[in-house]
Length: 201
Image 1 (cartoon, helix red, strand yellow):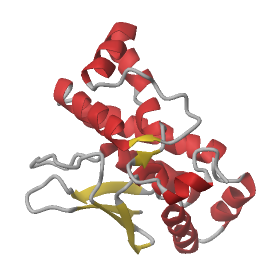
Image 2 (cartoon, rainbow, N blue to C red; image 1 turned 90 degrees about the vertical axis):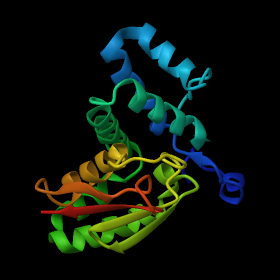
Image 3 (tube, rainbow, N blue to C red; image 1 turned 30 degrees about the vertical axis):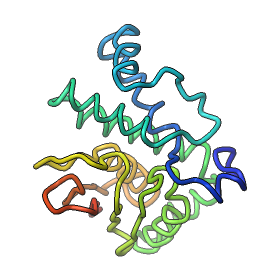
Image 4 (cartoon, one colour; image 1 turned 180 degrees about the vertical axis):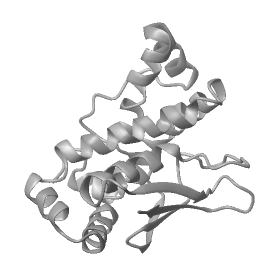
């Protein structure tokens, strides 16, 4: 069992998300503006205890940090969040998906690999969905209902670049390097409740 999730977490995990929702953003913010910028943006997001990576964290903390980044860097935030998602997927590949399973996925035909990977993502969705609900429409399409990272926000644009980065890197590594991912609908948009992510070759 993952060290992020104990039997007690299984019973009361509402409002928790994996620490990489914060941790993978911090080096990017520091490269953008130095240690002072990192400290300031964390404080502006109301985060005064940086996660140590050993346990799940309050999803509201991660949501405030992502929102603060979008507020301060509206032009760059999509790229920065997507890169943090890329690094989150790399962490998952290095620490959460056993190497033999990765070898099997890479050896399978793309459709079969996508099917198995989508099932694995659904089983471990709490890592990056928190109290939201992941729906696997098919092996190439995911929807997040009530996404906590954008909950309560309104936007004409899709906001979930971090999730795009996670899905894209997992699929590019384990299914096909040609995979692309796009958020085609966002829960922050008018009358939205689900964020829809579509992968394709």
